[in-house]
Image (cartoon, rainbow, N blue to C red; front, side, top):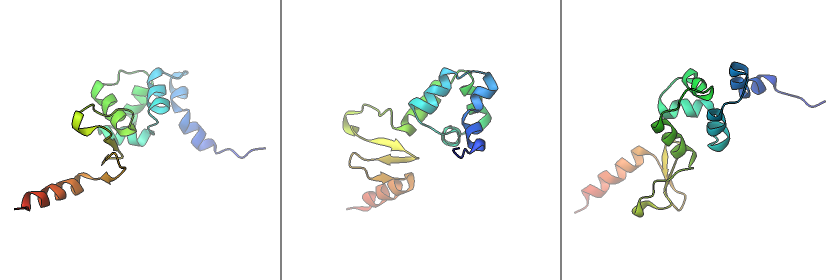
Length: 116
């Protein structure tokens, strides 16, 4: 018989337990975007309970959806000068794959401003 980690299995199916069905919001966040609960909550500054309420059918605000899309790399703004740029794990990712934090970008801009 296969060994099963029931604790993780129950965490995965928490929305089913709470609502007795899988809501389309849960499918959108977990399957389409692939964002885990903790990242979904921390990326928009809410508690896990709020993410679970959204998973169970409460309306997800448009801006929350947009942040999740950016975080999952499923949506990239169509700015003509930024084709191929994405966001992932709180970093901006260049088309070549280099990742930069906000602090790194601020420091680079500071150095750029120091040039004669």
